[in-house]
Amino acid sequence: MAPFKILMCDDEAEIVEELSEFFNEHGWEVRLCHNTVDAKRLLVEGPRPDLLLTDLRLDDRDGTSLIAFAQALPKEMRPQLHAIMTGYVIEDTTADDLGADVLYLKPVDPVALLNDVERRLAI
Image (cartoon, rainbow, N blue to C red; front, side, top):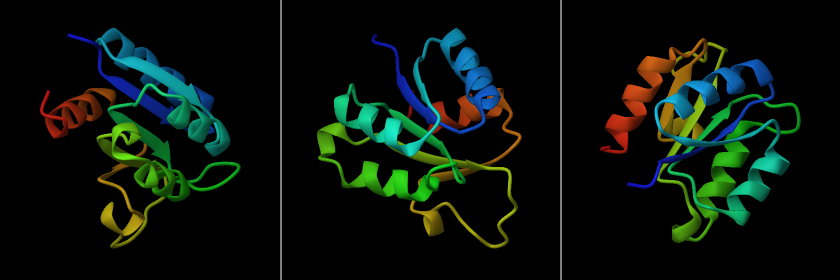
């Protein structure tokens, strides 16, 4: 079976590098970027990720704009699952409010994240 693909976008390099290493160790193919410009380019260039995982607050834009961009792509290019991570407590805000499928609070536990993502993708 081909590895599952994840595109991670976070301006905190340490976070994405740690998560990338963890997902790689569990058989995922990971692409990293630190801004929405690069993330959009990678989404358009392909291959299509199974999961788009982005920080809510990025240096150049916010993660919701990246999620909206991904959701507007043709179906064959669109990630199956759109997720936002944030270190900010947003009272009464849901993933749906942000246009995402799921919202994770930082610091993200890599094991819990992997288990939840695989459950949502029915792996």
